[in-house]
Image (cartoon, rainbow, N blue to C red):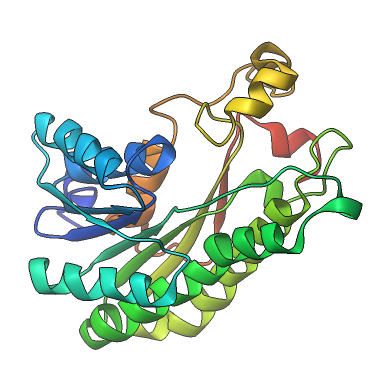
Length: 264
């Protein structure tokens, strides 16, 4: 029998977590959870002002945090984030691929440029960031935790009201990217899992929630609510810590039960 206490299984002391799209919303929520568990946090997103505010917020909670401004959709900038993180913190134990974008348009009129923008950030950046972190920190050390932020939009098709073809497609790709990379990198001691959030209040969902109504969206879930500022924390910490060391290639829907009743 193990003598490890359950709290120790979730302890991230001495570890380094890189969180893309970490300056607000779901990324900042995940960064809070990992930081409060003891990890040093590196946040990355495009806007320095947002990052400064987010790091100040984390530091006020006693979290060791810093930031790098970069566009994860740009290959050189994405690889540069990894280089700078390794130079400043020495290693990357946990990579949270959270940066993402959406675009609303009917499929027949969806701009190709918008399709490329969504795909480059939502799936190509997962590949580039994971490849760089894996090659330079996780594979040589035979240890790593990769957490991809997918979506329940990647588990099923659209309703007529959604009109987010590129977003849904990119999140479906993130789901199978997670499974495929988990299979390939398991022998290196690297776990690769994905969170699939349902509706959470965020800058990305603000317009949709306003159009469809928060109460209407909540009513679609068996729990009769949408996500809040705490609902991803436990799941993220499970995937990031020793508590999840035998879990890989899994997609965990955090959606109030929406995917359970709608076949996602």
